[in-house]
Structures are given as structure tokens and as C-alpha cells.
Image (cartoon, rainbow, N blue to C red; front, side, top):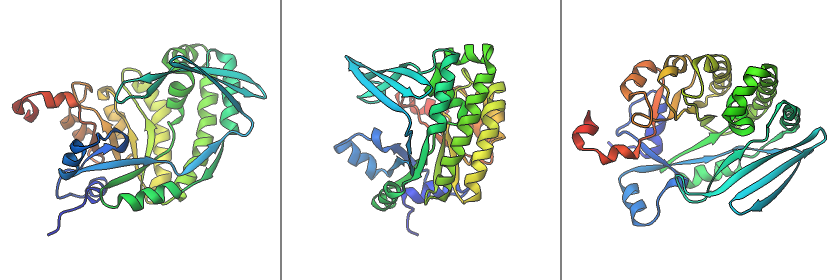
Length: 307
């Protein structure tokens, strides 16, 4: 019997089947180069190539950026007002050249209308060329996963507000949060229909969720129904729906079990996460657990790893 290729193994797991070996992958942009890469690839390390299948534009928004040292300042000019953000560049976290938002666009409730205009001004167009080329070039050496956007609440937090401003806004101006979530949901559905019509097989729905920051109440109200809505659209078209849930998930495990997701991607076990793999699998019996294997574990003894 011929051994499976890496891509076949991944698809077997995501479809509820049994591969000949446990597949292991690396995001292609994290892959080390040179001899180390060759040795890993010879040990059946596969690639997770990520790409999009649509282009987005905002025809009535003008962005103006300037750089000062390690910071990039961007102002977005719209017919209803301007907003700005500040990004730190040159970070070494994970890999050289990283960046992080240190000042989000929404500073107070007056900025919400500007963000809402930008959301509603967004136009999506299908673009399948990159996916088709990657799929052809990769062959069986891995998989191509197609990204969407963050689900509405997570985009509000991670792109527009940051956790501090979000917490204040949720307390003082909850209607503003609702307006943004509803506007983002409408636009997400426009993009998702393009993804559903695309040749994509595996689709990622956000999302960088962590139970320390996203409470069970927030998850149940703002994430669970949207995961199920979006996953339903994808599954009706034969797609596999996954989400990047890489945080501490113990308090959310029962709610995650109620999602229609096929796999929990980037699941992070202890010590960085707080949910042991055995408990996760018991809670998510109808889902694949796609583990983000912490490198810290490799510093332990074989006995500790086995336990």
C-alpha cells in the first residue's frame, strides 16, 4: 500500500477519516530555510499555504501614511470624518519584521460612525488566481487554506478598538458595538459568498480567541451564532470550516462544542494554553483538534512528553 501524501493526510483527518500517519504542518512563512528545511521536509513536514480568494477596496476612503522610526502613522480620510492608527514595526516576535497596532482607530464613540462608513464602503471582488496557482504548485506537499476575515466582534476588538477601548465602549455605549457588529456581519456575508463560490476546500474563519479576554457570555452572544451562520454557508457548498482558536479555551470548551466548525485550528495545549488535549477531544468529539504544538514541550524529557 502506498503511503499518503501530506495533503491527503490532512484532508482525511478533517473529513473524519484515518490517515496512515499523523500529519504535521508549518505555516509556509514560518518555515526555516536551508538544510534544516530539507531535513524537516524529508520527515514529512507539510506546508500550510494561506491565501485569499477575493480583493477588497474602499473607493471613498483615502489612506495617508507616514513613518517615524519604528512607527507607522496612518490616517483614513472619509466623507464623514477621519480616524487614525499607529503601528509599531520591526518587531522580532515569531519572526523578523513583525508589527503590532499600538493605537487603534476608535478612540471614542465619535469614531464609530467613521469606521461604520469604511465598513459599508468596502467592495469585494472574486480573485481566484493565487489559489489556483498555489494549489497546482504545492501538489501533495501540504494544503492551501483560504482566509476570510475576523468574525465581527473579534474585528471590532482586534482591528478597530483594542481590548481596553472595547471594554469601556461595551459598558458605556453598547449600541455602538451592536451597530458595528451588524455592519460587519452584512459585509462578511458578501465576502463569504465569494469564498463559497470559489474552488477553496478549507476555509478559516478568524479568530485568535482567548478565554481570558472573551468571556463565555461574550462568546455565546457574539461568536457562537456567527460561527454557525458562516460555517453553515460553507458546509452547504462542501467546504471544510475551521477557526484559528489559539488562546486559553478551558472556560469556552463547551460553547466551542456547540459550533458547527469542522476543526479547531492552532489549538494550544498547556503550558501556553490551559486545556489539555484529552479534555479538548472529549469535549469536541465531532471536530478535529488541529494542534499548535508548543516548542517549549520539546525541551522536556521523553517521559514528560509522553505523560
